[in-house]
Length: 454
Image (tube, rainbow, N blue to C red; front, side):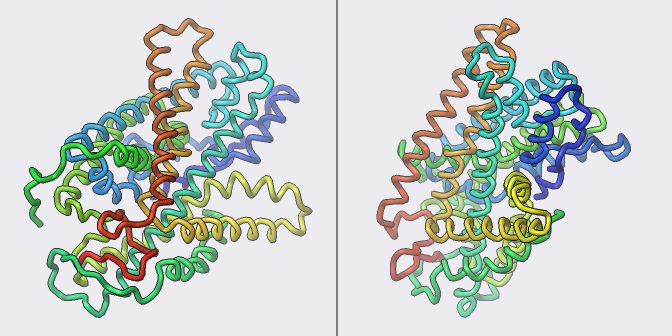
């Protein structure tokens, strides 16, 4: 999932016409990882290549948590809600694309990234205070990107640790025949946090690289879950649609950028259908026993253990790609504060500190499902649902927007804000509650025994 392979610094603005635009351009290059070098036409992406990149941007580890999300919403409400969130998310991506195009034409720039679009839009808004503090728009987007991507990295730690623990500790009872898992309580050999610490040094070394069977009857499943669980569903659903930060770089890399809107709608349609199918069928298959990651429900045989091992290895290397985003925002600022002789030391120190931060976050909160919901509610909902409609209002309001568009943008932002507030509250509430072994959505790391499904 090489969603950050296109994230390079934009050096195309070094020839700005005045001192003010030069300072903005230099600041943007030193703090943003969303920009890309304008490629030669021969090296630009075709429509099919762009579609593949778009699919890779949105299909990540959140996909494996969708069956549990369906459990938290209900077998009827879940697919419908996921479809609605998919439509709204795709629409917000189009809004972001239109705003960036409009600002590029207005400012005569080749390309503007997410943070710059927010900053330039605020520079021209009617409110004097917002114009004066427009740079904070870019800072806010950069901060949310850092929180979101480091949150993804923490989720990766938990995903790898959960699967590695199950792989190692079930090895003595793993069979050669693949049968559905049955309920069985085992005493853990090692705490899941030990597996996180085991993975830590390998990830530190990795980020030093600077260049980067039959479905049961679903009639017994609830059509709608409780309101509290639905809030957790909202966070997981938003988490899965994680490609909003790559919309503008992908469009900038296309040979024919005017075709990007079609590619975006096609790609998001395929992604939404895939998410609904996997989430619904996964929940229908495992019902109330659905785990935080569907891989933990796979039968206990060597074939599926190999699948989990291969997926965990893939996630291991994907960690570096997710890590690239916050690293390229934070490291240039830190390096600029030290002398040239300390540049390499500062670079590697920041990388080590950030990896340790994600590891310790996973150790402190080793609940995969709740961390996914928390990260999405806090930051992903802002990037995907709240900021794009507000950006459209700020960008196009001086040009006589229709009342319908204004009402639509306000409604989407309110929905995103409510999901952010209540989703965050519910995730935090669940985190402080004692784990009930019969209802926990993830591996029970706090009690003397683990609840495994064999």
